[in-house]
Length: 130
Length: 130
DNA sequence: ATAACTGCAAATCTTTTGCTTACAG
DNA sequence: CTGTAAGCAAAAGATTTGCAGTTAT
Image (cartoon, rainbow over all chains, first blue to last red; front, side, top):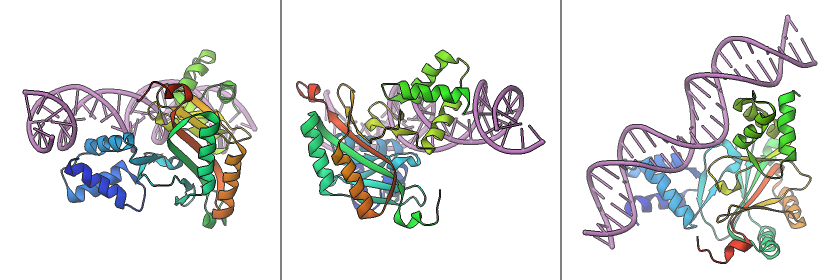
């Protein structure tokens, strides 16, 4: 793997937030000003195909861009608040159970799972109608 | 509601498949050749905001377009086969249970849920490595 | 040498917007 | 009348691609 790719992977792994391609590029450029947008996209495609990262839409809460995160041991749900834009995560054994059930009952071989929820977070429920 | 909107809603409701905006426009034009792309998009936005339709990405199996379907009583999972492109649906009480659990434990008020799975359908598992 | 990676610029694709006219309540 | 809807054309935004030069195996 090349230095540029290592840099990108490192950024994704270290990031506490979910990055979109533009932001990833922006951060990467602080360390390598010459890195190009195309390289970012090509690397993301590669990592996605290898199953090293997950791609999210976060309910298109902010346009059509995609967000990325390093694959974790445990799949989790992403909740996006339509009011404040906060993204929360949620993992549970019920989720794992549901996945197993899907495989068992449909015979589908799961490679990627995405569970996204849109709505209002606890704080935004008081005082907002949207 | 105007005639054009009624037409679009009717098409979405009657369609057995998941429609993207372009296809919806194409179908609508058979009955009203003057309908415009912008009208389709504006209507979709309106229906989405009113919670009458759900928007899907189907794991971006075919580019970045969005797919739409009339909201059903029961939320269901969409499984997209990376090989043959088939889209399958799956609803179960476990899914409903998971939703309830999320609400209960996180206090998040759910407005929309999207559970998408990418992988290989039963038929495509034999004989393919992708 | 051969294959994979990169930058650059241009192209693509889907979705959105501004503006003007037409229609509905 | 006054607000909403529609057509048209252009804009916007994210992602992809062709090509030529570079680097790594």
